[in-house]
Image 1 (cartoon, rainbow, N blue to C red):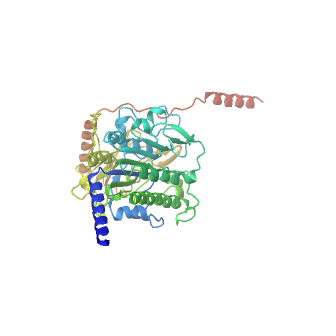
Image 2 (cartoon, helix red, strand yellow):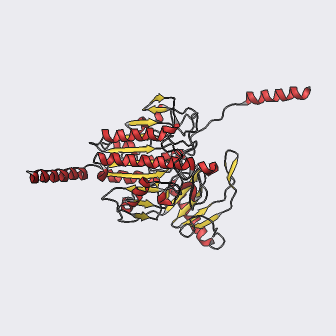
Length: 459
């Protein structure tokens, strides 16, 4: 009898495994906000414990030359869910609570493409692609949404559930835990059907907060506490996948929307060996940590040093899920990198354009990067990067962009500039920039101040 029970159990396990392999794969994308290249152990951090993210890298693949499409959040998020450079969408910078614009309705998001293929879709966390109803997640292919529509330093911080305000009382100490609970719930409720789960943390964007459980626990102060709680969140998601028997049939990707906000010093993160951070088109602004995990599909301990970007996630997911992007003929700017993930090949394309405020500031082809002349780069009134002339770097030998090779290799500079012009011709005309921020009319305040000053001078 015992042998019969054992045989039945083995058969059931085999049938379950077979059913999982025949089912469409689940997709989980986890996006941190302003996490630096040097902020997790797998990418060099020694003072922050990130065992769960490091585990994804150790048992999956680490992408060491992976880029966000922009050095700030909204354009990156638009690019990730459309597979298109944000300049094609007219999204050049960050949306604000006073914005009346958002992600264009004629763009086909990854959620819309997957939903048309029988997937359940959800986003928990920061949206930042417009807060008016037509721009919110539920109108852009997501079945569920819970989160804050903007960055956590902006006015009007609320939790939305779907299209409606769930709470105007947001205790930021518990943001990470709130999103994690929603994600774990969603996995359990949708274990019997394929799903796309997009977790978009507000942390470690300033102001940073950690729950009491994590405060004071890391070696890098509050910032480290925040990252260690994000790592805990990744662990909880992985536990939920395992508990529900979904781990073997789920692709998990972890990355960041851009580099660290270095002007905030100890609360701004680290770019590790890279130059500069958020808001710049140096490597520290757009080269971000990225790992992918899929047991049985991705070879444990894989490392890919070639160029790849978040633009590649859309076409890769479309390919892996057998979905169709039939609603539009608009060109994609990424490519399917499943051969990279599965160790069967390299990415075909070798170029990347670094946009800031809708303008190309730098261009990479192969190992070489040229940065065009730039004025002072400012955030508010703070100069974060002094003006520079044309810069030429070999990123393979100089990832920190310290040695300008323009004078010693003018032929390479000319070659890259010609390639850049060819890229511009291929991308063609792009729409005008959306109006993403409108200044208030403060003329009445200025007049009042002038009148007050005149009266004071007349005394």
